[in-house]
Length: 155
Image (tube, rainbow, N blue to C red; front, side, top):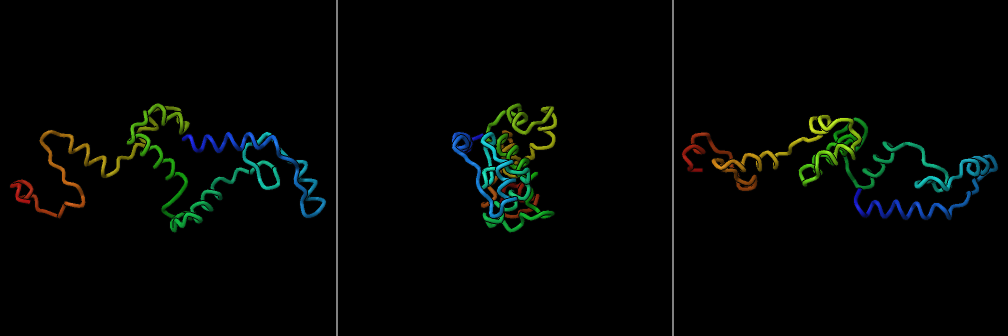
């Protein structure tokens, strides 16, 4: 967890001790809210009751606010893709596979490496470019060339 997120969680935890029950709009709602009131939960509703586990709905709400068009159920952007992206970026940026495994909660390192370490095009090109006999051109400078041109070195 990054420092900024950790600071937010710590602040929410400290603020929880100052919570008090919130009245509802009608007596039955007030009774339920007072009954479910909590100082023990870090994340609470506006009524200071524990948030229900509707992470997926919140994910799509945040995506909508961020104007991510394809973040709807059944579309290209989904919450599992965020885990894949996190794992891939963490590993490509120097995170240790064991640490990423523990963050994701996988039982084995093999699962993390097989499922989540998806190499991106840049990583593949970097890997090929690391070979002493290979020449790799950056995508913005690369044109489509024939195999013969590449072999001759005329491209």
